[in-house]
Length: 142
View 1 (cartoon, rainbow, N blue to C red):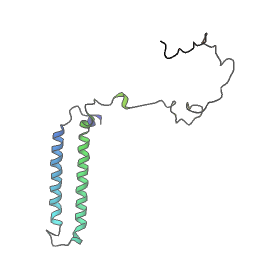
View 2 (cartoon, one colour; view 1 turned 135 degrees about the horizontal axis):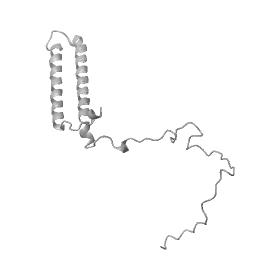
View 3 (cartoon, helix red, strand yellow; view 1 turned 180 degrees about the horizontal axis):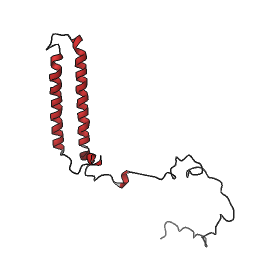
View 4 (spheres, rainbow, N blue to C red; view 1 turned 120 degrees about the vertical axis):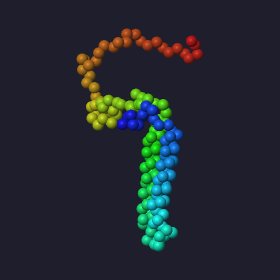
């Protein structure tokens, strides 16, 4: 499927648009040749008897032209995306299941409110800071 959506050498835009135009004109001519004999101008029936067949034919013609247009857009997809060589790593963003904010386990959620912490002596370690922090220097002096 990836080769279909991102072919190495897609058809040129001009070929696709020309074939689309020819196929659309062919659909229009086919619909006209199919529906013209059903009109009251070419037969001995009235509009009240001809309209269901004409409406069905016009609807099928519109559906066929829409499907042909969507197929053209699918074929033009490589031209719309430019010269990308497939998916880049940044196109797919993944996160681990445990770190998602929507985890519904209060003990596993990292965005929940603060939880009580056991304050045993074994939990608290020795401080790594051995001297106090120096005061900030004023912004103007360097």
